[in-house]
Length: 297
Image 1 (cartoon, rainbow, N blue to C red):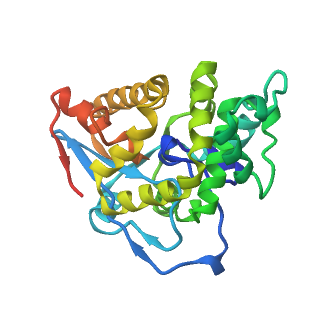
Image 2 (cartoon, rainbow, N blue to C red; image 1 turned 90 degrees about the horizontal axis):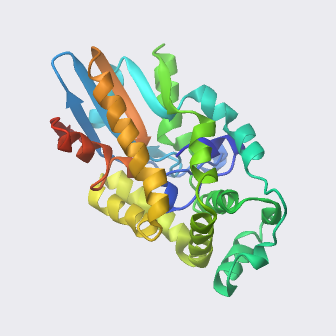
């Protein structure tokens, strides 16, 4: 997911696999980190679709766009992201519209003791105003704060770099979803599922920064198995969330790839890395449908 970038705080924990925006100043730059993220290719006689797993925000100085990724950027006629640049720009307003509760409910009444302690520790920098927000919205803001503490920057994220490169080249950029549709995935989760996600995230705050860094490191290595394990540890505990946030979306995106193969050209499809790994990742779904899918990096 990507919509959270528009409100200038980084998206959170492993569940979203990459909802992690934060602007860092140039003086915070760190030495370059070489990353070689996993990328797959599905093709027919006149169409090539590269599928690159992304991190929406990364440590400053991460060098991810060399090797086969550089070649795919150069060859692609079109960039397909989760959200188009226009939709990403609208995401903050959509969040502000959807996030408020109909009636306030104190966070202390929603969380058991351990989870409440984790929540309070995380909001020590600045209160979230969680009493007036839906559970899913509190979860998002918590995740953003975790990523901020983990020094993850959207300016160094894959989508930001790809958008700049394709704009320089004058090549079109499209999105698979709208900002509203993406955030409605959370809004439509049933109350019990929202509460379970919130409690789980708050109870695990003490190692959340480490988890965020571990996911970035696994992505940098192109370690698809490690990424799948990290994502699955969260969503497998809440099956309804897995279905809505991962599996169902992966099915829709797989269907999009199948339709796009009917048109000639070369596309770079760049989506959160969690959507391309595991038994219900897009490459696996395409392979199960009979397509030849090759990992090229």
